[in-house]
Amino acid sequence: MDSTSRSLALLLLLFLLLVLGHDSSSTGPDSAAAADPQPQLQAQAPTPTPWPLQFHSILFMNFSGAISLIDLWYDWPKGRNFNIIQDQLGQLLYDLEWNNGTSFVYTLDDPRRCSVLDVGFGILRPNWLDGAEYLGQERVGGFLCNVWQKVDFIWYYEDVATKRPVHWIFYTGRSAHVMTFEVGATLEDEKWQGPVYCFQKDEDELRPENQTDLGEYSRRILTDKRSFRGLSGF
Image (cartoon, rainbow, N blue to C red; front, top):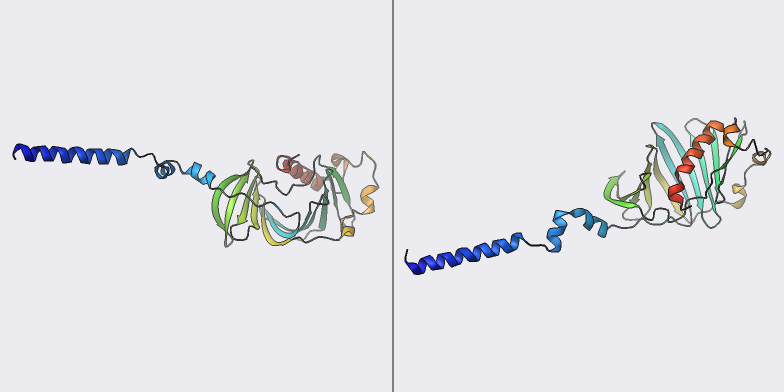
């Protein structure tokens, strides 16, 4: 090989080294995203849809095999939330919550019983999912859902197509499957009135630890409700 050929070969080699070095040191958006996909996920993360101001929903609940149906009425403008709970082969139970922190847990069928709870905060705000961490998408029960986690307390699944809630799981493992979701549906005002026997107790009797009729169930509900304190905004 003469000197001219050797010079051309050296120049070609230097050119190839420069091109390859430039490609490998690229720091553009695509290469940064490939190196660390999490910031890109959060930058593009959707936000959970706030709850409607009023809605009616039927929930199928499962907690370690113990199943129940909840007839849920949410009414933010009037500061109230109503859970009508049917445990499997159990007595129908009413859990009436008010924004002043008071909850009435009672039965209407014999034996008639009532517990009055001072929760210490009101019902969940429509935007209670603000600040939740986006986890990506997952298919649940045939629905493609966006998934969020809020303060290590609840995992919330929302249908990508309709923005309706589909499913949520509490940190205890208790899960809810949303069977129906009627935006704007309301319950008649007279149905929100607790029975008279809820108001026929003195101050000492109204403390959950002193109630024997629905005491154990009420204490469990009170614990669950107070776990919501970080979600309610109070």
